[in-house]
Length: 574
Image (cartoon, rainbow, N blue to C red; front, side, top):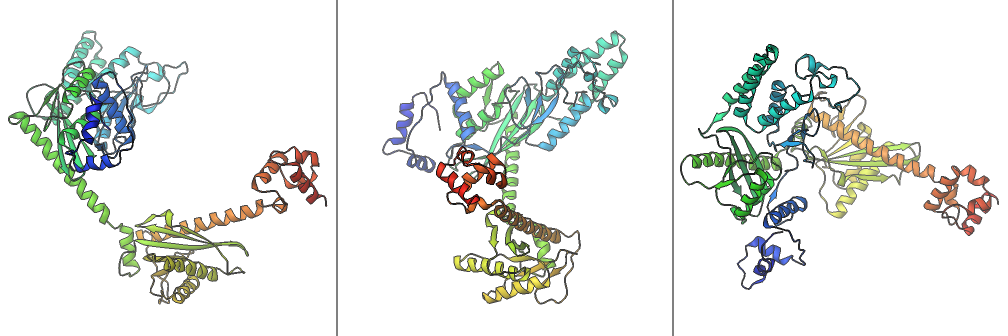
């Protein structure tokens, strides 16, 4: 997916011989089957269209910003008369103002708590203004809300506070404090001392926030410093936000792109995605190198900001030091991400390690199969097998069994049949065995399951039984049951597997029983299948009423031909 002033030249470049393509482009070239063109009015429009299409379709050969939809935003519902502040993860085309995205969710929640402490913004969901008066909540009495639901604050005053909130979220604290100072002086002159004291407290709280923030330069210019660190296809981007000379935060993102993707292309893709919904566009963006389509990007950002936006790629001085700081952050984030990625592939859950210890196993049982039986007398006897991998259900490996060889109600023999059939199938298909088999039952069920394994020549398979009454564990070769502490993670996992096997068996048993009970006398009639049976039951409600129906009534039923109606009538009236 790409854009160009001259599409003819752009496409032609891929088909020239010899063509200096990198491996990514060569792979793309081999899979080209057709072209689809979209014509835009300007280069800037093409730039944004490309960005939106990449975000929507996630093409394989473009730079991909991972999880960008999941990062939360703070939404100020500016379209309402009495706006609220919400945490959202999707941006809508409405009159609201969005601030973010916040990659540090904990930091965002802390900001929100601070915001609610300084500015008494309502947290209720009432549609205001309303003719109906609402009961004042606790927020009003602890001075966290001004009571707009009860008409205790007018719209203009509340909207003024919302403007202050937006300044705060934009990092314009100095402008905000200047405006609050004027408000305090005006209130004091009007002898509204309570209002003046409230504004003074807001100023003190904001001042304490500013003192905690790191001053990185004396200039009051707004800047974003973007730096990139990469290893293979994994890329970390760190963005430092400087507002009025103060560093107000850091945003970090993870991108995926071919190892040969140029830095300019990565930066171009990132800038478009990052500033697409950003409410604040800085005066200057400091970058490690010039991005692709930099002229178009400047033009687009200028349109969003309303004023010129500069790109800087410093080689020395203060700006270079800021870039180095961002680079250190990006490198640290990448190292942390790669470490987590590595640990994720190696990590064995605590419950699995605990199970190895409690059951005296040679290795952690990462693959566990759980078996249970469900029957009602001699009818609809079934077996179930659930499969857990690293402590989590793997439903693609679940199995259901109709009991075929046991005519009477004999849970022991049924367990034996399920074990024999399951492991017989694994042997036939040359599939690996689970590390542990859990039987729902006691010593008797375990004994028959062991006999089934021995008959297949796999008596060394690790197996155990978990009894329901007091969660006793039975192991082969141990005459007495084993008891594990109730709060042990290993016992919790075993119970979870047992309960899941029980649920799966019951659900299959109910399904078969339902099919058997629903399967009525109608199924014995020639020409009546599932669709016609449903049509008859929908029209008449029961088999009894179908019996009482006339031939004409039967013929007038959907999907029932005259011949079939005659067969039905003849069956019930021989």
